[in-house]
View 1: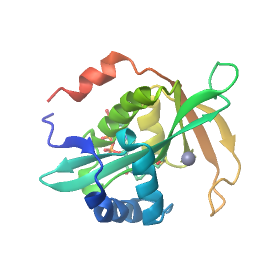
View 2 (view 1 turned 60 degrees about the vertical axis):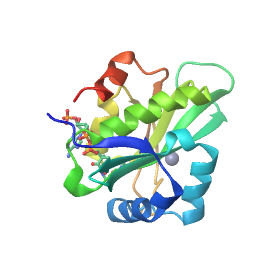
View 3 (view 1 turned 135 degrees about the horizontal axis):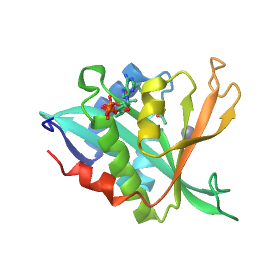
View 4 (view 1 turned 90 degrees about the vertical axis):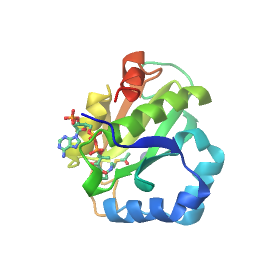
Length: 171
Ligand code: ACO
Ligand code: ZN
């Protein structure tokens, strides 16, 4: 399939579009301060996908230090995918996967040893995306979301296999 989008780092002038995508695609919404704070602290893992000068999707992450989810001892630097979304009309073209691969790659620049995220247990498209990229469910958080739904915590070790990186440059 021909690739129709490009990836680049988020810029503050993208804020309105990104917040609009977030509101359209997810019930978890945030203040503009929250978005800009993640951008200021972790600019390399706040990435947008663009198609014909329109933003089609975004991913934003945080780097945290804490107990590992996967097979390590002591404290570990972890990349946390805070939010990812692709507008409905741009889905199923590989944009979500490309955003994830680029963010995982850039987490390595922040010396993260693993990546984790929370996802609604009913969110099959997202769960499939994460599984395809090598994430496994490490635990379930009961009633994590405000509406009472449970979350899976999913995680994978870093670095990412170069296989995925190469996929980014295929057309
Ligand atoms: N049904 C089943 N599997 C799916 C679906 C679907 N509708 N959509 C994606 N997948 C899986 C497939 O394994 C797919 O690989 P394939 O096409 O080779 O079968 C893989 O994900 C990659 O698909 P992409 O085309 O790269 O994903 P897309 O660009 O459509 O974006 C996303 C996926 C981000 C989950 C999108 O559906 C979306 O924005 N959903 C609403 C917002 C959301 O749920 N975000 C995640 C919340 S959790 C969090 O943010 C940490
Ligand atoms: Zn989270």
